[in-house]
Length: 309
Image 1: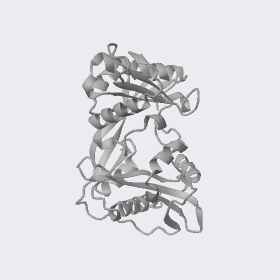
Image 2: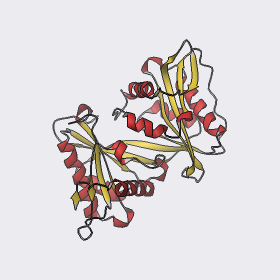
Image 3: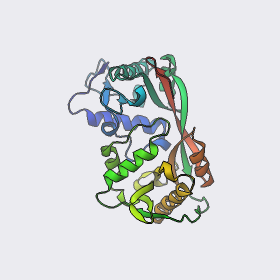
Image 4: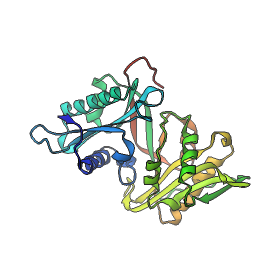
């Protein structure tokens, strides 16, 4: 049965969230797993009728604003414990995510399903969703050759300083604003990413104004976790360039700086995620010896008179 979460159930739901994601797509799992509380604006749990206190699945949505998402698009994710995967349970979770999107006044629900998650893919197809995009997870092997960037006059790369979170958040949201499937990053999400990883948040700033952030890269290193190949967890995230400064080589410069930072901390292989429909960063990552290891698909379902994009 699908029901609202009860007080104190977030820990159990998070455990299912992480176990399901790691099972279906270990290459795409974020450090520490996807945080349900930081990502979702609303969620429901799936519990067996003969064990109503046991959480075995979660349906969650994220709306950019209260009462709705940007352009009427609501993002959705479903997870199901691998030991409890049955077609009817998968269908119930998909239906629950659609209902949550309707309640959030969404015109379109965009469901993100790991390409290897056949249990969920069948359910979204049967519910009428159409696949619209693929996000690739890539890995740079430990024996990859050095990656260098050409000089970039006017750009200085420095570490994030204490108290800069709001300004970094503003820079990230500005850089991502015109990208596909953009939804504003929340301050709590950024702070969760920065927890124990502040030194890896590198900022590209103007050489004549170090307070003006024009590019970013977050180089995450967590040897308590691991990459899909078993090497210590090393991850490139939030590689962005301000729209007014693109085409100057800043993205390549920040990527090279992020890779150097990780290697200096002891990283060997390095992973990242990239929108498969955006040729420019995909080409950049391939030039740096990143290879696709897995992927996640976006599926759209029109709920009313909005157009998918």
